[in-house]
Image (cartoon, rainbow, N blue to C red; front, side):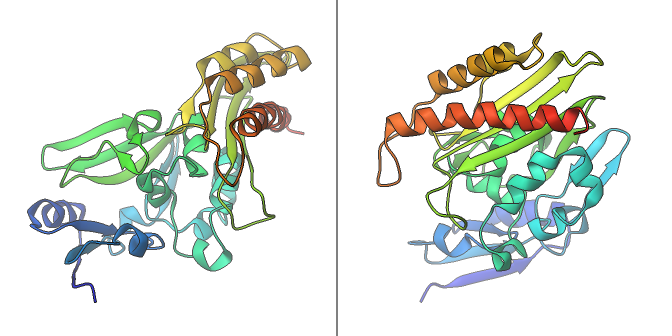
Length: 287
């Protein structure tokens, strides 16, 4: 049986201290839905519970935008109408993680820190230019979500560092987002390919800004500037959407496994980019 040393932190500073001072492998308990899998082969292990830290468990919206506690359960997130109104794509990505039971504990921050190539919320966060606030022994630093994940199951945090918040700026007028994924089953599966898109439209319906991210088709989720460039300056007509889809396809570097071939995944990520951009534009127009 694995020996577990458990500590419940009452503050961010205490959590950082516990993580830094541990002389055995330390894991953060946020939702905990992946903790057993992550801990395989580690014996003994230190578990640092951060659920008693209020700022880690909630979400606030002010004039600057959304500050999301990394441990806020996804079920609470997608029950918030104010968050849905600003970031519907992020909320629908959070809704896709696991079963109803899992969603009562899993969190966007946990999904990000697990750093899976197929994580649903990471492309949605990238599309919305989310920023990661990280606290450690050297103080606080901020990292763009697209730079947070460094490889399969790896991220940029060093020993003693803790993700303390996700910040998403308030969307400009005429802006909305969408996230789509393809899975072999109807639910409770991981993405074969995914795409998150945010677009801003002016009064004439011309796209003035965009961000496109794809997931499950490379070692990390990717920001695709070429796909955004294909949309900007257009009215999101078929030609522009096709160019964005082609850019996502070209940037992807998937593998073949039992869930899909390289060719299939490349095709699907292009299709999802086009469809997500279309849905984001419809939302931006208030449709």
